[in-house]
Length: 128
Image (cartoon, rainbow, N blue to C red; front, side, top):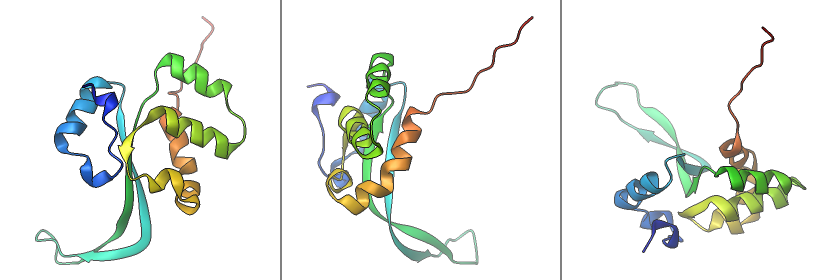
């Protein structure tokens, strides 16, 4: 069974072994999409005397970088931002908490973040 056939519906089912397999199968990149709850927890570090406040993770999902053909297809379907984000998630989703895709409030929060998976490196052209 190939890793593209394994799509955990819960981030708790994504093991380090599965992450390693995804990274091997998708050398362009595997990304963890994190949605915070809006709450913070205090962590006491042995290295620091000052307690740290860190955001509480509510959901996690995993995506991969698109291939050139997928990028061509995705950019041709840039319609409204909601539909576009749905298409990108459907195409590049590897697994994780399904609430990211199904709960409106959570979905809206990831829309700008999902776009960053498609970011293209900059280049320049100089006349010589």
